[in-house]
Length: 175
Ligand code: BEZ
Image (tube, rainbow, N blue to C red; front, side, top):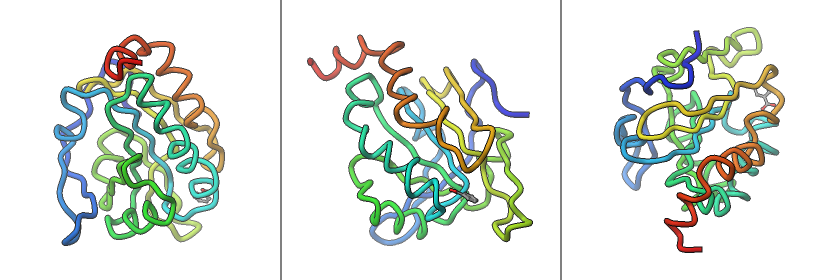
């Protein structure tokens, strides 16, 4: 069953591509004492993820931060090399953190697996967004179809962040 609003993000280790290769990062490091706009998707370089989902968050990154987010995190069941290359191709640097859940530990722990074995992709994660405040889920949206990025889009995230956290964002940025 998928994680629910009010539940804590489980403690697992993920990876981010650094200068010398994949570097471990724990969910505590990613989420503790922060307000994070998290989104997950079925795969780097796949059509909807590349044409809409990630580009939306890159385009709206500044506004999402201004509305209160300390960080924007993109997660996929891919290795850190792939996530790094995809982020570079898409211009995510300094805007969206590209986090690899290569062994699907996070995805399984939050109950968001998507079995794409029949099309040769193995177990991936569903397309989703979450607002995570100090490690606790404050909002979750899971797409009914993996090829759609509507409920979990950057535009929807921005709307929700602005509604719930704008005061925090304006206080933080002074704007
Ligand atoms: C897509 O992003 O459109 C996609 C993702 C996973 C499988 C097939 C398509």
